[in-house]
Length: 487
Length: 96
Image 1 (cartoon, rainbow over the protein chains, first blue to last red):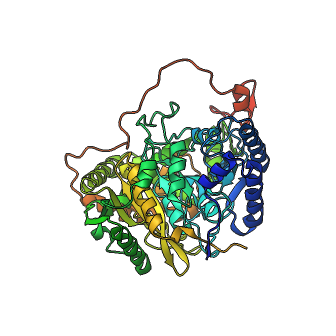
Image 2 (cartoon, helix red, strand yellow):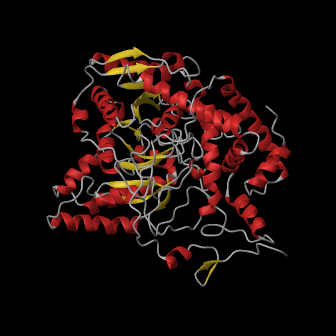
Image 3 (tube, helix red, strand yellow):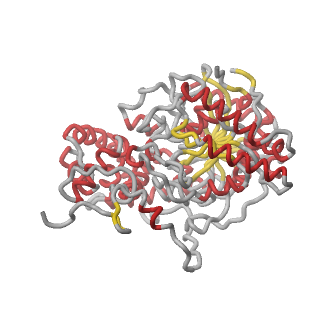
């Protein structure tokens, strides 16, 4: 562990705008670092070096010409490989999209680039974002920068590892059941899952459309708020994107912990949390309390049913969304079939990995005749109960706090033979997706040198409360300033 | 709830247009049975009078229905495994 001297996204943008450093220098430095560390980490599926240098030159030219440049001027950003960029490959971690170059660009990437950010590459992920370790990538596993014998978490493992290793100060991921917050916790960085509807899903490869949300990885909460101010807002190309006003987050960053009410669902944390994780969690609460926050006990009576509910709802939606991969319009086609039906079957059998097939089968099963009411509709009702739990709990507090994960990063292969064990690792992150509320993971300590995450949840569209609590916490502690030792 | 058998998996795989090997069918049957056994916990909950929740946001926002250019056809077709004269080409659908 070494103290972190690397500039934040906010530092870089400020210096580029003041012409203290050029966007070209910043881009070259980060691309060099990616080149050096990539053989050890495998965080990227595609590095967009040439495109990045071209964009960096354009940012420098705009600054030199005195044109207003955006809040992310010259900031290198890594993009999870399920967000489209015109002409750049999108694989979604799957063989079925190998070689696909989308003819359009995702709304979030447009926003980042309009703000001056420089895309340095596309990051590795579990195939179709299905997984908690990045071991389900069809291409390669990504290694955790804190311990290369361990997973970075998933599904956005490449983005989390890239930010932890300083390959980029900012990265985008997507979070359907914890796929931003869990890898953020396991890699010791900040990860934000915004309120459902806050961020455009246009150009995001769909997994479970009622749960998917795009969000940033950063090292500081201040950078997460900066990224949020760029990413949030209505996009007409996504009918679920909200027109709620996006507030200025700077007052929240200045507010401090004094008077903040933190709800802790103690009875939900009773079982299965590692002792060092629970200890770090208690210490984080004490730090916030010493700065004037008040900790209250809350109940989430149905949270224990969240995993069961999630794996019915999410797989049902996935089975429908993934029907589009049929070898007709893009990606892989296996032409061995005698007719179209056989071509579909063979293409999908060759193109999808085991976890994706497992979830398509489960999702198709719970939607099939005879099981639809008992599984799918019932899970949707339990989803309502889980949302109500949070609505009630958040009447008596401003944020809910839990550990982000029950354990730190696990070893490769440790959970691959038992899908259910892998699913249970998402116990604390899944409820927020079902309820549609925002969540933030902030580094809060270490267990045997492995990072631990503090999760904060808030009312829908109240990301300000998360930034307030998270930034206050980072002002009181130094966990986020530790960096993994990278040769 | 009934146990998931390799035959159940085969039936569902056909619905989902997946060709599976016998080994995949056996493995998936065992694993899905585990997951569904775990999911039994929600069967015991009282959900009478509870509305099913299909989405986290309220009603979707609609935009003005104004004609605007769509994606360029050549560009889109250039991604297709097989395209001909502005169309996607597929293997035989009927007869044979």
